[in-house]
Picture 1 (cartoon, rainbow, N blue to C red):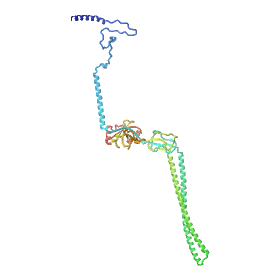
Picture 2: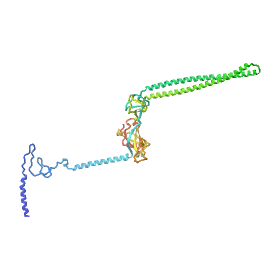
Picture 3: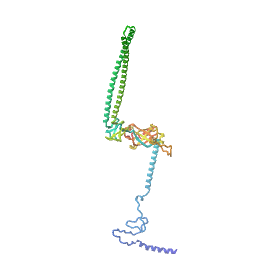
Picture 4: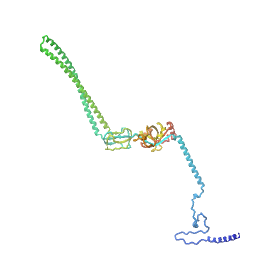
Amino acid sequence: MPEAREAEPEQAASAEAEAPARSRPARKAPAPAGRPEVRETPGALPAPGAPPAPGTLPAPGTVPAPEQPAAEQASGKPKSGRKRLVLLAVLLAALMGGGYYGWRYWTDGRFLVTTDDAYVAGDITILAAKIPGYISAIEVQNDQPVTEGEVVARIDDGDYKLAVQAARDKLATLEATTARIERQVAAAREQVAQAEPQIDAARADQIRAAAEYDRQAKLAQADFASRAKFEQARADRDRTVAAVKTAAAALAVARANVDVLEAQRVEAARTADEARTQLARAERDLSFTEIRAPVSGIVGNRAVQVGSYVTPGSRLAALIPLGTVHIDANFKETQLASIRPGQVVRLEIDAYPGLDVPATVESIAPASGSQYSLLPPENATGNFTKIVQRVPVRVKVDPEVAAKGFLRPGMSVVVKVDTRDPKTARAALEAMAPAQDRQAF
């Protein structure tokens, strides 16, 4: 113990001797030209981890600590509380949104059968030529509305006018022939009327000649008459018999001539009828030189120009009656159990978001779409993979809405069929969006 106490004064003395050496600044070499001189501040060394004082160099072997932002140096308690408020607000909004959508599904969504495989369809009419010829004029342009009966295009009608004139001339000739034969028939009937009395006259002469012959024969037997008179009486009798036959034959010829002329008249009349048919056909062909719109609609996809040569069946343009458009919705076969004609349909048209279009289910196709394809599926042979089929459902658009013409065939549509009864479905739709709030075109 005494030895330890003696060592303590010696250590203290050595520490006091070293202290002035530490406090004295070391001599340094002059700084190079162009470099600022850094002065060391005499005093104690900085504490570990503390930043060096301005204008001083860090102690050898120490790494300066990075400066911290002022926000991080502040207390973390307010920031943590703000995060909790944000998370609480997000959680509350999620709960409210989930509750709202759950309520919507329970009160409305579970009754809807939806498909996005639906498109606007229409009864597109293809305008084609009925007769051959060159296009002489086109009266409409693409996307132009036309009314029923309006001329769309014209074909050169020169040849067809000549055909009509030739048919009329031929008909006039046949009508004149028929009139001539009718007059001949009338003359033949007069000949028959003339031949009939001649038979009566011949028969009268025959009776008289026969009586004279009998009288002369009796006188000749009694030798009261000459032989010459008897022979004359017999000749007169034979001549009158022949005259009767001649008159009868003449009457038969006259009647036969009437029959022949009647047959010629009928033939001429039927030939005239054929000429009338040919005239009607020529006039019909002439009318086909004007291609008219069979229905009201909009012209599109025009395929000819002035001077183009067309043949029967050549496509000229397409005519789309926008007032009769409908929706073809292809539902899965597993969705058809609750779909019935007459149910209310909600339409979401991609081209018009938010537009309210009244519609109802019109009919359900009698077969799936695959059965109408060029090569229907045959699953009786080979491997089998079951595929859910789609059945077209026709949706009728309100005629007043369709007549506005903003629905164009080919547009994509999302179809939602409300499987409730129509009255309840309309009431639910009205409750969701009153009529004054629904967007109309």
